[in-house]
Image (cartoon, rainbow, N blue to C red; front, side, top):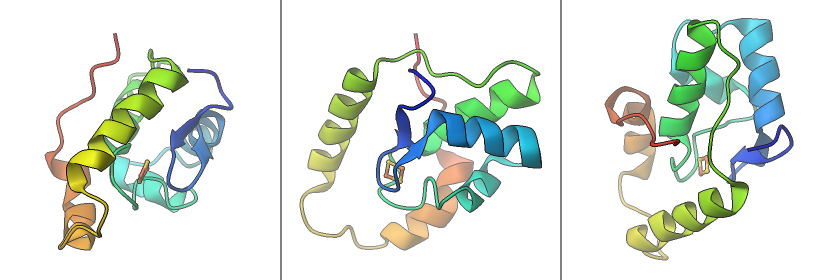
Length: 108
Ligand code: FES
């Protein structure tokens, strides 16, 4: 993924914006990344990826996602289809839990 590719597709938050946020704020927990333009608070597709970026940052590595933006968008479309077209009941509740319960993404 390149710096200007979007990690949070719901809120159009790029990898560059998230990197800058991590470098500037050094958030103690991944959920604080939501303060960066609401990343991760929509469909929640990107939450595992935000966690992965946070982990890399905490390890002193450059936050990066080894997935093409095309594949990322395709996977997100599949995810959205699995939710159906109507709003998901309890989605806001899931939003608050997402940062603590999702497994890390596969990025190889
Ligand atoms: S892609 Fe980030 S909340 Fe939907």
